[in-house]
Length: 199
Image (cartoon, rainbow, N blue to C red; front, side, top):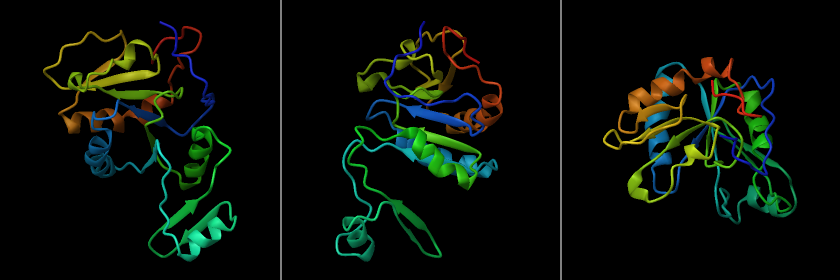
C-alpha cells in the first residue's frame, strides 16, 4: 500500500518533538476523546500540547478590545499576555490552509513531551484514527499509511492492515496508555515513504 498522496509537506526527518495526529470524521468524537485523555496523560507525567484545526473563520478576540483594535490596525502577530495566560493572534489571509509545520514551530519552545494534532488528517504525520461505523464514512487506514492505530467501539469487527494497532474506543485508559508510549515509539519510527514499513 502506498502512502496517501497529499499536497501538504511536513519534514519529519530528524524531528525530535513527537507528533501524533488524531484523525476522524466529524461526529466521531475527537474533541470529547481528547477532553477525557488530557487529564490522564497529565497524570502519567506528560506535558501535552494540542494543535487543533478549525474549518471556518474564527476569532478568539472581542471587537472593541485593545487587542482586537491593534490586530485590525495591522499588528501581525499580536501577543497578549497576563499572569494567567497568553494568546498569540495573527491574520493569515494569503494562506489557503493552515501551515502545520509553522504551528509545530510555535509550540516547540514550550518543550512539550508530545504534540497531539487534531483535524489535519490529510497531512503526512503518524496518526491515531477514530472510527465509528454509525457515522457512515469510510475507514481511512486503508488509504493512509501514516495511520498507526485505529480506535473503534469494541463490538465492531474490522480487519486492519498488518502493523496497525487496534484500540477500544470505549477504553479511555488503554488509549491513554498507547498515547503515553508514543514518545518512546517516535524515537525509532520508520516513515511510510517509498514503501517503507510501519514501526
